[in-house]
Image (tube, rainbow, N blue to C red; front, side):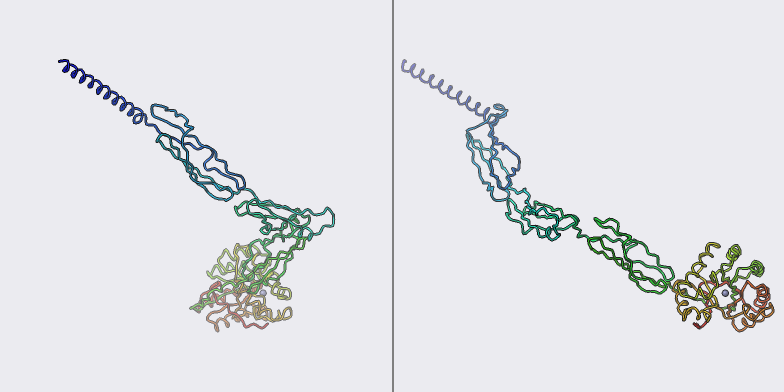
Length: 490
Ligand code: ZN
Protein backbone atom coordinates (compact mmCIF):
# COMPACT_ATOMS: atom_id res chain seq x y z
CA UNK A 1 0.00 0.00 0.00
CA UNK A 2 2.87 2.20 0.88
CA UNK A 3 4.38 1.46 -2.36
CA UNK A 4 1.15 2.28 -3.90
CA UNK A 5 0.95 5.44 -1.81
CA UNK A 6 4.48 6.29 -2.62
CA UNK A 7 3.76 5.73 -6.29
CA UNK A 8 0.73 7.80 -5.89
CA UNK A 9 2.71 10.57 -4.21
CA UNK A 10 5.37 10.46 -6.89
CA UNK A 11 2.77 10.76 -9.55
CA UNK A 12 1.19 13.76 -7.84
CA UNK A 13 4.60 15.42 -7.48
CA UNK A 14 5.28 14.87 -11.17
CA UNK A 15 1.99 16.37 -12.11
CA UNK A 16 2.74 19.45 -10.01
CA UNK A 17 6.13 19.82 -11.61
CA UNK A 18 4.58 19.47 -15.02
CA UNK A 19 2.00 22.03 -14.02
CA UNK A 20 4.73 24.38 -12.87
CA UNK A 21 6.67 23.85 -16.07
CA UNK A 22 3.57 24.49 -18.11
CA UNK A 23 2.86 27.64 -16.11
CA UNK A 24 6.43 28.86 -16.59
CA UNK A 25 6.23 28.10 -20.31
CA UNK A 26 2.94 29.91 -20.49
CA UNK A 27 4.39 32.91 -18.64
CA UNK A 28 7.46 32.97 -20.86
CA UNK A 29 5.31 32.77 -23.96
CA UNK A 30 3.07 35.54 -22.69
CA UNK A 31 6.14 37.58 -21.72
CA UNK A 32 7.73 37.04 -25.13
CA UNK A 33 4.47 37.86 -26.80
CA UNK A 34 4.11 41.05 -24.77
CA UNK A 35 7.71 42.19 -25.18
CA UNK A 36 8.44 41.22 -28.74
CA UNK A 37 5.08 41.17 -30.50
CA UNK A 38 3.00 43.73 -28.73
CA UNK A 39 5.88 45.99 -27.72
CA UNK A 40 7.61 45.51 -31.07
CA UNK A 41 11.22 46.45 -30.40
CA UNK A 42 12.97 48.19 -33.23
CA UNK A 43 16.33 49.84 -33.84
CA UNK A 44 16.76 53.28 -35.36
CA UNK A 45 19.83 54.98 -36.71
CA UNK A 46 19.77 58.75 -37.20
CA UNK A 47 22.51 60.67 -39.00
CA UNK A 48 23.66 64.01 -37.76
CA UNK A 49 24.71 66.90 -39.95
CA UNK A 50 23.18 68.29 -43.16
CA UNK A 51 21.86 66.20 -46.01
CA UNK A 52 23.74 66.18 -48.26
CA UNK A 53 27.02 67.00 -46.58
CA UNK A 54 29.02 69.48 -48.63
CA UNK A 55 32.78 69.23 -48.40
CA UNK A 56 34.90 71.96 -49.95
CA UNK A 57 37.72 70.63 -52.05
CA UNK A 58 40.96 70.88 -50.09
CA UNK A 59 39.40 70.45 -46.67
CA UNK A 60 39.13 66.94 -45.19
CA UNK A 61 35.89 65.08 -44.66
CA UNK A 62 34.85 64.70 -41.03
CA UNK A 63 32.07 62.24 -40.28
CA UNK A 64 29.29 64.19 -38.58
CA UNK A 65 28.45 61.10 -36.41
CA UNK A 66 25.29 59.17 -35.87
CA UNK A 67 23.00 57.94 -33.09
CA UNK A 68 21.45 54.49 -32.57
CA UNK A 69 18.19 54.32 -30.67
CA UNK A 70 16.14 51.35 -29.43
CA UNK A 71 12.40 51.88 -29.39
CA UNK A 72 9.31 49.89 -28.55
CA UNK A 73 5.61 50.56 -28.59
CA UNK A 74 5.21 49.93 -24.87
CA UNK A 75 8.69 49.77 -23.41
CA UNK A 76 11.20 52.60 -24.20
CA UNK A 77 8.57 54.31 -26.17
CA UNK A 78 10.76 57.48 -26.20
CA UNK A 79 13.76 55.41 -27.11
CA UNK A 80 17.03 54.77 -25.37
CA UNK A 81 20.43 55.43 -26.84
CA UNK A 82 22.36 52.32 -27.61
CA UNK A 83 26.00 53.23 -27.57
CA UNK A 84 27.32 49.69 -27.83
CA UNK A 85 25.49 48.75 -31.01
CA UNK A 86 27.55 47.16 -33.74
CA UNK A 87 27.99 49.75 -36.58
CA UNK A 88 29.35 49.20 -40.06
CA UNK A 89 29.82 51.95 -42.66
CA UNK A 90 29.96 51.04 -46.33
CA UNK A 91 31.51 53.48 -48.77
CA UNK A 92 34.28 56.07 -48.57
CA UNK A 93 34.63 59.77 -49.28
CA UNK A 94 37.68 60.90 -51.24
CA UNK A 95 37.96 64.54 -50.33
CA UNK A 96 40.65 65.08 -52.97
CA UNK A 97 38.33 64.14 -55.83
CA UNK A 98 35.29 66.23 -56.72
CA UNK A 99 32.06 64.29 -56.90
CA UNK A 100 29.12 62.66 -55.19
CA UNK A 101 29.59 59.92 -52.59
CA UNK A 102 27.14 57.58 -50.85
CA UNK A 103 27.71 56.16 -47.35
CA UNK A 104 25.52 53.34 -45.98
CA UNK A 105 25.33 52.88 -42.18
CA UNK A 106 24.13 49.60 -40.68
CA UNK A 107 23.55 49.12 -36.92
CA UNK A 108 22.99 45.69 -35.31
CA UNK A 109 21.89 45.05 -31.73
CA UNK A 110 20.60 41.79 -30.33
CA UNK A 111 19.29 40.62 -33.61
CA UNK A 112 17.71 43.94 -34.47
CA UNK A 113 19.02 45.92 -37.46
CA UNK A 114 18.72 49.43 -38.86
CA UNK A 115 20.32 51.25 -41.76
CA UNK A 116 20.62 54.78 -43.18
CA UNK A 117 22.23 56.51 -46.14
CA UNK A 118 24.19 59.69 -46.38
CA UNK A 119 25.16 61.69 -49.49
CA UNK A 120 28.42 63.61 -49.46
CA UNK A 121 29.44 66.08 -52.17
CA UNK A 122 33.03 67.12 -52.57
CA UNK A 123 32.79 70.48 -54.30
CA UNK A 124 34.86 73.42 -55.49
CA UNK A 125 33.13 76.72 -54.81
CA UNK A 126 36.21 78.85 -54.52
CA UNK A 127 36.71 81.52 -57.17
CA UNK A 128 40.01 81.79 -59.00
CA UNK A 129 42.12 84.77 -58.02
CA UNK A 130 43.61 87.18 -60.55
CA UNK A 131 46.71 89.12 -59.58
CA UNK A 132 47.65 92.22 -61.56
CA UNK A 133 51.20 93.38 -61.87
CA UNK A 134 51.67 96.72 -60.22
CA UNK A 135 52.77 99.46 -62.54
CA UNK A 136 55.37 101.99 -61.43
CA UNK A 137 53.91 105.24 -60.19
CA UNK A 138 54.84 107.75 -62.84
CA UNK A 139 52.94 110.29 -64.86
CA UNK A 140 54.05 109.33 -68.35
CA UNK A 141 52.52 105.85 -68.45
CA UNK A 142 51.28 105.14 -71.93
CA UNK A 143 48.27 103.15 -73.00
CA UNK A 144 50.72 100.44 -74.12
CA UNK A 145 52.21 100.25 -70.61
CA UNK A 146 48.76 99.45 -69.29
CA UNK A 147 48.04 96.99 -72.07
CA UNK A 148 51.33 95.13 -71.63
CA UNK A 149 51.16 95.00 -67.83
CA UNK A 150 51.34 91.42 -66.53
CA UNK A 151 48.78 89.36 -64.69
CA UNK A 152 48.42 85.86 -63.28
CA UNK A 153 45.47 83.75 -62.24
CA UNK A 154 45.42 80.85 -59.78
CA UNK A 155 42.66 78.49 -58.83
CA UNK A 156 42.53 76.17 -55.79
CA UNK A 157 41.47 73.22 -57.98
CA UNK A 158 42.69 73.97 -61.52
CA UNK A 159 45.98 75.52 -60.47
CA UNK A 160 47.47 78.09 -62.86
CA UNK A 161 44.69 79.40 -65.07
CA UNK A 162 46.51 82.48 -66.41
CA UNK A 163 46.22 81.25 -69.99
CA UNK A 164 42.45 81.14 -69.64
CA UNK A 165 42.11 84.79 -68.63
CA UNK A 166 40.09 86.92 -71.05
CA UNK A 167 40.95 90.60 -71.33
CA UNK A 168 38.39 93.18 -72.30
CA UNK A 169 39.04 96.84 -72.82
CA UNK A 170 36.20 99.17 -71.96
CA UNK A 171 35.93 102.84 -71.23
CA UNK A 172 38.50 103.77 -68.56
CA UNK A 173 39.58 100.24 -67.68
CA UNK A 174 40.94 96.88 -68.72
CA UNK A 175 38.92 94.00 -67.30
CA UNK A 176 40.27 90.50 -66.66
CA UNK A 177 37.96 87.54 -66.24
CA UNK A 178 38.43 83.81 -65.86
CA UNK A 179 36.17 80.87 -65.02
CA UNK A 180 37.47 77.70 -63.34
CA UNK A 181 36.44 74.18 -64.33
CA UNK A 182 33.66 74.24 -61.72
CA UNK A 183 32.23 77.44 -63.14
CA UNK A 184 33.48 79.80 -60.44
CA UNK A 185 34.30 83.26 -61.83
CA UNK A 186 37.34 85.34 -61.11
CA UNK A 187 37.52 89.04 -61.96
CA UNK A 188 39.91 91.93 -61.72
CA UNK A 189 40.15 95.32 -63.33
CA UNK A 190 42.85 97.84 -63.95
CA UNK A 191 41.78 101.45 -64.19
CA UNK A 192 43.27 103.13 -67.25
CA UNK A 193 42.73 106.86 -67.55
CA UNK A 194 41.78 108.00 -71.07
CA UNK A 195 41.20 104.49 -72.39
CA UNK A 196 38.28 104.60 -74.81
CA UNK A 197 38.16 101.66 -77.19
CA UNK A 198 34.42 101.96 -77.88
CA UNK A 199 33.19 103.91 -80.93
CA UNK A 200 30.18 106.19 -80.63
CA UNK A 201 26.73 104.76 -81.10
CA UNK A 202 25.01 106.11 -84.22
CA UNK A 203 21.25 105.86 -84.42
CA UNK A 204 19.25 106.68 -87.54
CA UNK A 205 15.75 107.91 -86.84
CA UNK A 206 13.35 105.97 -89.03
CA UNK A 207 15.84 103.18 -89.67
CA UNK A 208 18.36 102.44 -92.39
CA UNK A 209 15.80 101.88 -95.14
CA UNK A 210 13.72 104.83 -96.23
CA UNK A 211 11.23 105.11 -99.05
CA UNK A 212 9.62 108.10 -100.64
CA UNK A 213 7.82 108.76 -103.89
CA UNK A 214 9.27 110.93 -106.61
CA UNK A 215 8.37 114.55 -105.98
CA UNK A 216 8.36 114.38 -102.18
CA UNK A 217 11.37 116.43 -101.20
CA UNK A 218 13.77 114.34 -99.14
CA UNK A 219 13.97 115.75 -95.66
CA UNK A 220 16.62 114.24 -93.42
CA UNK A 221 14.67 112.01 -90.99
CA UNK A 222 17.21 112.64 -88.23
CA UNK A 223 19.98 110.84 -86.38
CA UNK A 224 21.78 110.86 -83.08
CA UNK A 225 25.24 109.93 -81.86
CA UNK A 226 26.17 109.04 -78.30
CA UNK A 227 29.57 108.17 -76.92
CA UNK A 228 30.96 107.09 -73.62
CA UNK A 229 32.67 109.16 -72.26
CA UNK A 230 32.27 112.00 -74.79
CA UNK A 231 28.47 112.24 -74.48
CA UNK A 232 26.22 113.61 -77.20
CA UNK A 233 28.10 113.80 -80.50
CA UNK A 234 25.07 114.45 -82.71
CA UNK A 235 26.27 117.89 -83.85
CA UNK A 236 29.56 116.32 -85.00
CA UNK A 237 27.93 113.77 -87.33
CA UNK A 238 28.93 114.28 -90.96
CA UNK A 239 26.22 113.43 -93.48
CA UNK A 240 27.19 112.61 -97.04
CA UNK A 241 25.18 111.62 -100.06
CA UNK A 242 22.56 113.41 -102.10
CA UNK A 243 19.07 112.16 -102.78
CA UNK A 244 17.62 113.04 -106.16
CA UNK A 245 14.01 113.02 -105.05
CA UNK A 246 12.85 113.64 -108.63
CA UNK A 247 14.40 110.54 -110.17
CA UNK A 248 13.59 106.96 -109.15
CA UNK A 249 16.57 105.14 -107.65
CA UNK A 250 18.31 104.08 -104.48
CA UNK A 251 20.48 106.76 -102.90
CA UNK A 252 22.84 105.91 -100.02
CA UNK A 253 23.26 108.57 -97.37
CA UNK A 254 26.28 108.00 -95.13
CA UNK A 255 26.66 109.25 -91.56
CA UNK A 256 30.08 109.38 -89.89
CA UNK A 257 31.17 110.47 -86.45
CA UNK A 258 34.37 110.04 -84.41
CA UNK A 259 35.00 110.37 -80.69
CA UNK A 260 38.01 112.10 -79.17
CA UNK A 261 39.89 108.79 -78.97
CA UNK A 262 39.57 108.48 -82.74
CA UNK A 263 37.01 105.67 -82.78
CA UNK A 264 34.76 106.09 -85.78
CA UNK A 265 31.19 105.01 -86.30
CA UNK A 266 29.44 104.99 -89.64
CA UNK A 267 25.91 104.21 -90.71
CA UNK A 268 24.21 104.23 -94.06
CA UNK A 269 20.65 104.96 -94.92
CA UNK A 270 19.39 103.60 -98.23
CA UNK A 271 16.86 106.08 -99.54
CA UNK A 272 14.65 104.60 -102.20
CA UNK A 273 12.88 107.08 -104.43
CA UNK A 274 10.11 105.31 -106.28
CA UNK A 275 7.79 106.30 -109.09
CA UNK A 276 4.10 106.30 -108.34
CA UNK A 277 1.98 104.16 -110.64
CA UNK A 278 0.27 106.00 -113.48
CA UNK A 279 -3.50 105.91 -113.77
CA UNK A 280 -5.16 103.98 -116.57
CA UNK A 281 -6.39 106.47 -119.18
CA UNK A 282 -9.96 106.08 -120.41
CA UNK A 283 -10.66 107.59 -123.79
CA UNK A 284 -14.29 108.81 -123.98
CA UNK A 285 -16.48 106.87 -126.37
CA UNK A 286 -18.82 109.76 -127.17
CA UNK A 287 -18.04 113.20 -128.56
CA UNK A 288 -16.63 115.14 -125.61
CA UNK A 289 -15.39 118.67 -124.94
CA UNK A 290 -13.17 119.44 -121.98
CA UNK A 291 -13.31 123.20 -121.41
CA UNK A 292 -10.15 124.29 -119.58
CA UNK A 293 -9.28 127.71 -118.24
CA UNK A 294 -5.78 128.80 -117.26
CA UNK A 295 -4.22 131.65 -115.30
CA UNK A 296 -7.31 132.49 -113.17
CA UNK A 297 -9.27 132.86 -111.14
CA UNK A 298 -9.95 136.48 -112.00
CA UNK A 299 -12.75 139.05 -111.88
CA UNK A 300 -14.58 137.35 -114.75
CA UNK A 301 -14.48 133.88 -113.24
CA UNK A 302 -17.61 134.21 -111.04
CA UNK A 303 -19.61 135.17 -114.15
CA UNK A 304 -18.20 132.14 -115.94
CA UNK A 305 -19.14 129.87 -113.05
CA UNK A 306 -22.73 131.16 -113.15
CA UNK A 307 -22.90 130.51 -116.89
CA UNK A 308 -21.54 126.97 -116.53
CA UNK A 309 -24.12 126.33 -113.78
CA UNK A 310 -26.92 127.51 -116.07
CA UNK A 311 -25.94 124.90 -118.67
CA UNK A 312 -25.02 122.24 -116.13
CA UNK A 313 -21.56 122.09 -117.70
CA UNK A 314 -18.46 121.08 -115.76
CA UNK A 315 -15.07 122.49 -116.73
CA UNK A 316 -11.48 122.44 -115.49
CA UNK A 317 -9.54 125.38 -114.04
CA UNK A 318 -5.72 125.37 -113.92
CA UNK A 319 -5.23 128.10 -111.39
CA UNK A 320 -2.57 130.52 -110.25
CA UNK A 321 -2.10 132.35 -106.97
CA UNK A 322 -4.06 135.34 -108.28
CA UNK A 323 -5.57 136.42 -104.99
CA UNK A 324 -9.11 135.22 -105.73
CA UNK A 325 -9.06 132.62 -103.00
CA UNK A 326 -12.81 132.60 -102.51
CA UNK A 327 -13.44 132.08 -106.23
CA UNK A 328 -10.99 129.18 -106.14
CA UNK A 329 -13.16 127.66 -103.44
CA UNK A 330 -16.27 128.29 -105.55
CA UNK A 331 -14.75 126.38 -108.47
CA UNK A 332 -14.49 123.27 -106.31
CA UNK A 333 -17.82 123.76 -104.55
CA UNK A 334 -19.65 124.00 -107.87
CA UNK A 335 -18.27 120.65 -108.96
CA UNK A 336 -15.53 121.68 -111.40
CA UNK A 337 -12.09 120.13 -111.54
CA UNK A 338 -9.24 122.20 -110.18
CA UNK A 339 -5.65 121.78 -111.29
CA UNK A 340 -2.29 123.35 -110.61
CA UNK A 341 -0.92 125.88 -113.05
CA UNK A 342 1.71 127.95 -111.26
CA UNK A 343 2.23 130.36 -108.40
CA UNK A 344 4.22 132.98 -110.31
CA UNK A 345 3.91 132.16 -114.01
CA UNK A 346 7.50 133.41 -114.24
CA UNK A 347 8.92 131.15 -116.98
CA UNK A 348 12.52 132.10 -116.31
CA UNK A 349 12.30 131.26 -112.60
CA UNK A 350 10.19 128.11 -112.66
CA UNK A 351 12.02 126.48 -115.58
CA UNK A 352 15.47 127.23 -114.12
CA UNK A 353 15.76 123.68 -112.76
CA UNK A 354 13.58 120.68 -111.91
CA UNK A 355 13.86 121.65 -108.23
CA UNK A 356 12.70 125.18 -108.96
CA UNK A 357 9.79 123.86 -110.99
CA UNK A 358 8.71 121.45 -108.25
CA UNK A 359 9.01 124.16 -105.62
CA UNK A 360 6.47 126.22 -107.58
CA UNK A 361 4.27 123.20 -108.35
CA UNK A 362 4.13 121.95 -104.75
CA UNK A 363 3.55 125.44 -103.39
CA UNK A 364 0.59 125.93 -105.73
CA UNK A 365 -0.74 122.52 -104.75
CA UNK A 366 -0.67 123.64 -101.11
CA UNK A 367 -2.34 127.00 -101.88
CA UNK A 368 -5.19 125.16 -103.62
CA UNK A 369 -5.40 122.73 -100.73
CA UNK A 370 -5.63 125.56 -98.21
CA UNK A 371 -8.35 127.33 -100.17
CA UNK A 372 -10.44 124.35 -101.26
CA UNK A 373 -9.51 121.32 -99.17
CA UNK A 374 -8.59 119.46 -102.37
CA UNK A 375 -5.04 118.13 -102.79
CA UNK A 376 -5.17 118.01 -106.55
CA UNK A 377 -2.74 116.06 -108.74
CA UNK A 378 -4.06 117.55 -111.99
CA UNK A 379 -1.75 120.12 -113.56
CA UNK A 380 -0.83 122.07 -116.64
CA UNK A 381 2.65 123.37 -117.39
CA UNK A 382 2.80 127.12 -117.94
CA UNK A 383 3.14 127.38 -121.71
CA UNK A 384 2.19 123.70 -122.05
CA UNK A 385 4.60 120.78 -122.20
CA UNK A 386 5.60 121.78 -125.74
CA UNK A 387 6.80 125.23 -124.72
CA UNK A 388 10.13 126.45 -126.02
CA UNK A 389 10.30 129.45 -123.74
CA UNK A 390 11.89 127.20 -121.07
CA UNK A 391 14.90 126.59 -123.32
CA UNK A 392 16.38 129.92 -122.29
CA UNK A 393 16.40 128.85 -118.64
CA UNK A 394 17.28 125.19 -118.85
CA UNK A 395 18.06 123.06 -121.87
CA UNK A 396 15.94 119.91 -122.08
CA UNK A 397 13.96 120.60 -118.97
CA UNK A 398 10.52 119.77 -120.38
CA UNK A 399 11.65 116.26 -121.32
CA UNK A 400 12.77 115.74 -117.72
CA UNK A 401 9.80 117.43 -116.08
CA UNK A 402 7.11 115.56 -118.03
CA UNK A 403 8.54 112.29 -116.72
CA UNK A 404 9.17 113.58 -113.20
CA UNK A 405 5.71 114.97 -112.62
CA UNK A 406 4.11 111.70 -113.69
CA UNK A 407 6.51 109.68 -111.51
CA UNK A 408 5.44 112.00 -108.69
CA UNK A 409 1.81 111.07 -109.26
CA UNK A 410 0.73 114.18 -111.16
CA UNK A 411 -1.34 114.07 -114.34
CA UNK A 412 -0.41 116.84 -116.74
CA UNK A 413 -2.77 118.07 -119.43
CA UNK A 414 -2.09 119.93 -122.65
CA UNK A 415 -4.81 120.71 -125.22
CA UNK A 416 -5.74 119.99 -128.80
CA UNK A 417 -7.89 123.07 -129.39
CA UNK A 418 -6.33 126.48 -128.77
CA UNK A 419 -8.68 129.49 -128.56
CA UNK A 420 -5.57 131.65 -129.08
CA UNK A 421 -7.00 134.09 -126.50
CA UNK A 422 -3.50 134.60 -125.15
CA UNK A 423 -2.21 135.26 -128.68
CA UNK A 424 -3.81 136.85 -131.70
CA UNK A 425 -7.47 136.37 -130.82
CA UNK A 426 -8.56 139.60 -129.23
CA UNK A 427 -12.33 139.37 -129.60
CA UNK A 428 -15.07 137.09 -128.45
CA UNK A 429 -15.99 136.38 -132.03
CA UNK A 430 -12.51 135.13 -132.92
CA UNK A 431 -12.36 132.98 -129.83
CA UNK A 432 -15.72 131.38 -130.66
CA UNK A 433 -14.62 130.71 -134.23
CA UNK A 434 -11.21 129.28 -133.23
CA UNK A 435 -12.73 126.97 -130.65
CA UNK A 436 -15.62 125.70 -132.78
CA UNK A 437 -13.27 125.11 -135.71
CA UNK A 438 -11.01 123.17 -133.43
CA UNK A 439 -13.79 121.07 -131.90
CA UNK A 440 -15.06 120.17 -135.37
CA UNK A 441 -11.73 118.50 -136.08
CA UNK A 442 -11.52 116.77 -132.72
CA UNK A 443 -14.40 114.59 -131.56
CA UNK A 444 -12.66 114.55 -128.17
CA UNK A 445 -11.47 118.08 -127.57
CA UNK A 446 -9.49 119.77 -124.83
CA UNK A 447 -9.98 123.48 -125.26
CA UNK A 448 -7.49 126.03 -123.95
CA UNK A 449 -8.89 129.36 -122.76
CA UNK A 450 -7.90 131.91 -120.13
CA UNK A 451 -10.59 133.12 -117.72
CA UNK A 452 -8.56 136.25 -116.99
CA UNK A 453 -9.73 137.60 -120.36
CA UNK A 454 -13.31 138.89 -120.29
CA UNK A 455 -13.72 138.59 -124.06
CA UNK A 456 -12.77 134.92 -123.85
CA UNK A 457 -15.17 134.24 -120.97
CA UNK A 458 -17.82 135.96 -123.10
CA UNK A 459 -17.30 133.33 -125.82
CA UNK A 460 -18.10 130.33 -123.62
CA UNK A 461 -21.90 130.47 -123.90
CA UNK A 462 -21.84 130.25 -127.72
CA UNK A 463 -19.28 127.43 -127.54
CA UNK A 464 -21.49 125.46 -125.15
CA UNK A 465 -24.60 126.06 -127.22
CA UNK A 466 -22.85 124.94 -130.40
CA UNK A 467 -21.42 121.89 -128.66
CA UNK A 468 -24.75 120.78 -127.22
CA UNK A 469 -26.48 121.30 -130.57
CA UNK A 470 -23.83 119.17 -132.26
CA UNK A 471 -24.00 116.23 -129.87
CA UNK A 472 -21.04 116.94 -127.61
CA UNK A 473 -21.02 116.39 -123.86
CA UNK A 474 -18.97 118.68 -121.66
CA UNK A 475 -16.80 117.01 -119.04
CA UNK A 476 -14.32 118.07 -116.39
CA UNK A 477 -10.88 116.47 -116.53
CA UNK A 478 -10.01 113.73 -114.06
CA UNK A 479 -6.82 111.73 -113.59
CA UNK A 480 -8.12 109.03 -115.95
CA UNK A 481 -8.90 111.55 -118.72
CA UNK A 482 -6.62 111.70 -121.78
CA UNK A 483 -3.68 114.08 -121.31
CA UNK A 484 -3.64 115.52 -124.86
CA UNK A 485 0.14 115.57 -124.49
CA UNK A 486 2.09 117.67 -126.97
CA UNK A 487 5.38 116.68 -128.50
CA UNK A 488 8.23 117.91 -126.34
CA UNK A 489 10.16 120.79 -127.93
CA UNK A 490 12.74 121.31 -125.18
ZN1 ZN B 1 -0.65 130.10 -118.26
